[in-house]
Structures are given as C-alpha cells and as structure tokens.
Length: 172
Image 1: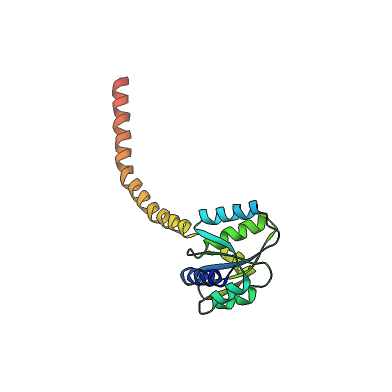
Image 2: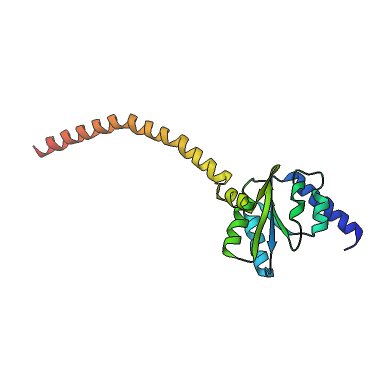
C-alpha cells in the first residue's frame, strides 16, 4: 500500500468516525473468510458495517474525533464495527461473538462515552430503535382500541337483545 492509498484510507476512516454514533472495537482471532463475510452480511442487514483495520492508520484517523479515546484498544489484530444507529453494531457484534469464539469484543464508544466490553454487551441488550417505535405505536394504539370496544359494547348488547327477541318471536 503506497502513501496515497494510506492517506485515502485515513481520510475515509476519519469521515466514518465523524459520521457514526457507535464504534465497537473487536479482535477477530482466526475468523475464516466465510465467517467474516457472514458477519459483514449481518452487519449490512442491520445498517452497520464491519471492517478490519490497520492499527496505525486507524489511530491516525481517530485523532480529532469523538472516538479518539479508543486509540489504546488498537493493538494486535483488530476490526471495527460501526453504525449510525446507536445500538445496531453492538447488537450484531455481541450476538456473533456469543456464537463464535473467534470474535472478541474489546470495547467501544457511544457518542463520546467510552465503553468497555461489558458496556458494549449491556448496550447490545437494549431494544433497537425500530423495536422502541413498535412499542410506542402499540401503547398509543391500545387505548384507542379499548375506547372503540367500550363505545361499541352497548350497540352490540342492544343488537343481541333484538336478535334474542326476534328469535323468540320466530319460535312462537
């Protein structure tokens, strides 16, 4: 990799660090190409990205970004998972690490807050933005459904009484 390629890589990583809300630093120890491809696919489906990085170049890209305190985590084989969604990358990385011991979670950062591996695991347990939206819609919908049921109940009771009288009249 020549100097211009390295400069482009550092610039693109700096853009990434400037535009995302969550960065998870991982250690992929012996991931096969197929396993890494599967992890990337899962990340992509969740709106996140997974990238194996060069430590020195990543530390250069971290300078001046909110994620600069993560620089200490970049030693040995490392990869980053990142997303604009504050939870997506953590959810997928933790889920994958639980099922595959070749991926280790080192830590991460959410906005300006640095997280250790336990913090990333706790973050992954939170519901996603879509799940929260669905819960809110459900909570808003439930009272409306109950009100409609209460309003319809007297009409339904009246209809049953009329039907009972008509059935009684036909039987006579």
